[in-house]
Length: 57
Image (cartoon, rainbow, N blue to C red; front, side):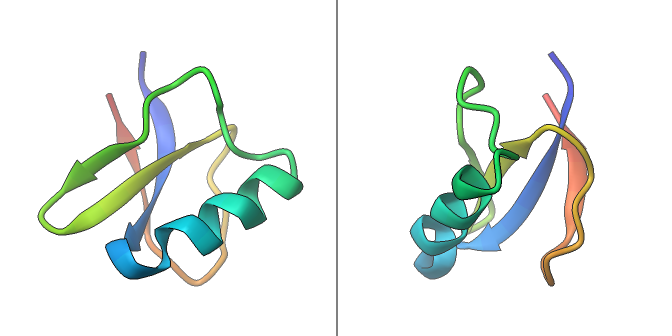
């Protein structure tokens, strides 16, 4: 399933995950991914939170 993902540095991933979860944006049923030292957090829609977003599988 394709969905938007916020691309965050590994060291900030937990902080950003909690923020997205508290805002109801994190897609809990999709797996959190990783790519080139970054973490891909799946979200309901494209969000602007100071980190790049991309469509991911």
